[in-house]
Length: 98
Image (cartoon, rainbow, N blue to C red; front, side, top):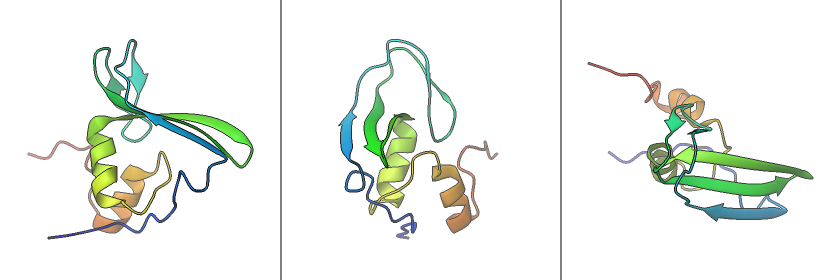
């Protein structure tokens, strides 16, 4: 089954400034999507940009980055992955289902 969510915004095209990198955490961070902890030693996505005159930094754990990359290839808003997928699939991927 192939599915793509309609979260259509090109984050890098709408940015006045945009830089993406994949560093290894040196300290604890919180994922902007699932709110889980990114631990020291874990690789994560870091985006620094300027949108509508405001600078922002977003840190995303690799599982959320991969989900977003797969389901929202046409763009997305940072911090809205859980809600967007729930609206599209009625499924919260953060819950532990037995």
